[in-house]
Image (cartoon, rainbow, N blue to C red):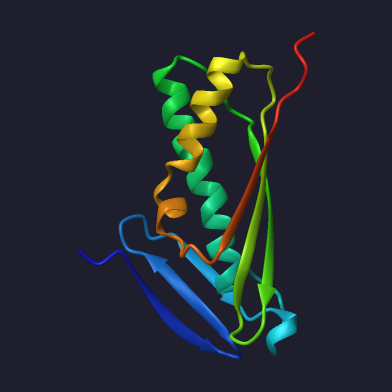
Length: 137
């Protein structure tokens, strides 16, 4: 079954349609590659997909452990390189909003690294992931 369709809109912009939900995503070329930078670029989506996937898998694992991780956030930084132009590194900082014991931290962090996007990215793309937890006061 087809997942999505993507249509070129002109001016270095695309519109993607998720067929199951009818949700849409607009992409725009980044300003450092002839674009306006008015929306996610395709490589922004690639980097953001890693964080989104990690948070989703953390959520699945946390739910199975009866832990609510609602509000956990990820900050994503995409680093490009030239010759060939490609994503060189994705930095993800995941910040939990509640203290967790070491065993739980280890299980959730392992879950994050098992996400399908992390496992699908080419090994030449460095995945630099850090986790932050508030102190347990």
